[in-house]
Image 1: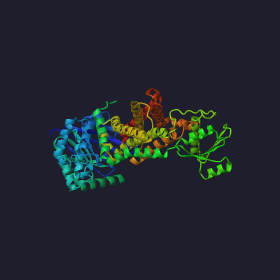
Image 2 (image 1 turned 90 degrees about the vertical axis):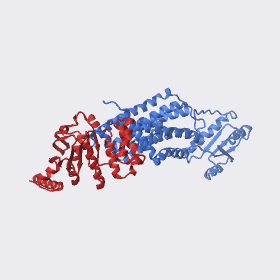
Image 3 (image 1 turned 120 degrees about the vertical axis):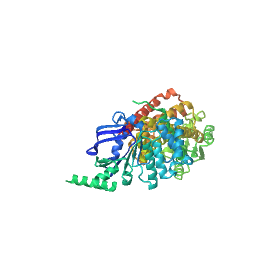
Image 4 (image 1 turned 135 degrees about the vertical axis):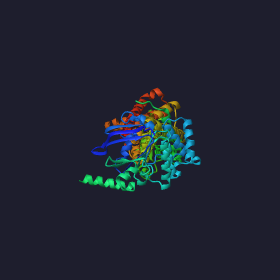
Length: 249
Length: 359
């Protein structure tokens, strides 16, 4: 597999006043990769993703997403990425079909295109008979999958998932990861933030964030091997503990 | 400067329209509330007085004086009683609320004295107006000369004054409320964030939000107008096209104000309160709707210049009662247009800035 660079950052930094949320992070992520950000709340995962999506302007450093510069070409970035956050982003008081129509329209898809996509989504998520139901009446897991489908209507090459599986049951989480693998096989780059340790194991490469810095970055297998631990959970605890000890001294 | 994409504007407008029609309860409230307001205000604000108890003491007893009394008896405004010339009797009649006013006709018909119960100054002045009008209409009978001519509203109907005012009030209230809530709701639900990631431009979002609400507010405007005409029997002398154009401008002003509110409020509750307070109070007090602006101190009169309802009131009264045409109402229209552009650009600017800095 030839490696095509999908996202690249060089010493990217974000400060909010005197607080540094992301501190000199370098990244190289390749097409088709599932790249995970693991870290506690406030470690800088979401800030990182938001900068890459063009929601936040970095304070310093360079970053390119899909070949576009985050400072100058954020409008082009917006057209080539998909984003789904932990917050539910569909309109509960609209029907499933109306939600799809709306997001299709926002990405300027034409009517025929939207109809095709609707058909695909109906088959894939087995939603055929629920198209005219209000979104608030369908199960949470299905809603989450629908939200992802809506974020993917314009067929983006890079997808950012900000804690996509918080608040859903294990069965749905598993389904969700199957979808993520499918996307990766289609050559899409997937960024995932999570604080579920078991989920972290599913990523191709994993970065562990602490206080705005990446303190470890490798495949889950290599991380376990290097740190002589059996699970990512233990690796995480070990790394964070040594980091805190180092800070303390 | 990027070019506005029509597909995206219509996507927002269509979605907003679905929000409205799915929410049947709010839809009913949105259309029913203005009607209830109209009916309540309409009957509560009624300043007409019927059944004035009028005591007349006729000391002349001539044909002329009898003709004068007949002119009062012939009107359904008065209940006419005969009363003696005795000041004690008159005083008692007032105390016992048997009469609201007493008319004394002197024996030589030269002098007429009118005594009115002043404990309610408002109705006293209305009664005075009514009686002097009846007197002047019967002036050919008596040698005294009173000439009053009331333009545009010869019967002094209060509906002529409150129906245009209510259209101004209800339109500004509902319009500002609708847009301010609809944007803060997206903030609260987190759906705004999803839109920020999309290629949607701030201006597209704002225009898309405006479109369906222009339609709804205009419908409400016509609804109040028609009900006002049917229920309270107001005249409408101007043209319907002029009304459509001018109320469109007014509705845009109010909706833009709602947009501006949504950029400063975080919750729907906050937006609702700001919208209600900042539309209702100035419209009631400072637009010339309830209280005449001419009698206010100069500072308040200056403040009234920025109350949009003041201009729409001129428009609505002009169109309905005076039969003004568009060119005669150009000045208030230009003011409203100016407000709309100002408010819209503030809202757009603030919103674009917020979209950039969203944490």
